[in-house]
Image (tube, rainbow, N blue to C red):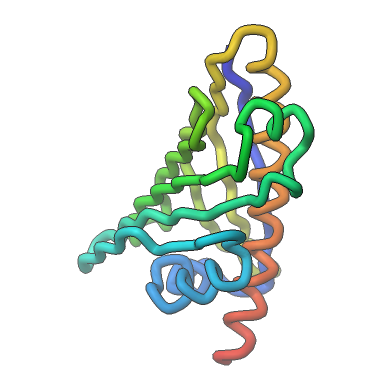
Amino acid sequence: MARRIEHRTTSRWPARDVYAALVDETYLRDRLAELGGTDPKLVAFTTTEQSTSYQLRQGVPADKLPSVARGLLGGDLVIDRAESWTEAGYAGTVEVMLNGVPGRLDGTITLADTASGSELTLTGQVKVGIPLMGGKLETMIAEQVALLLDKETEFTAEWLARRA
């Protein structure tokens, strides 16, 4: 059974500024350098006037993982994350695959202006196809994704502030 995830982060920056950062190749490389863990890579980056797509690879050292994940993986966790954004509506999709785990996260991302800045919302589902342990891993993955989004939002605000 899949676990639904919905997570919101807020920024003091307007949606157009946050969007411009999220689809900027330099920003992505800077974010990976800061938050990407072991062997971070911008695997692919494609942009047109209407959309931007990219694939990121990030590593989490085994000693930073919960014991249930360490036992299953037998080593570091490698996360492959593909995002595709369209400027119209500041909306995107995200797909996350994890090495050594028959599971994934699929979702949509929206970015909208608020009275005090903007809000980014990830809505999706985490599915891990391992009997008995799948539910625990789905919960752990959803929690880790929420923490990562919070850290990325902080990084984005700092990155934008340095360029203001």
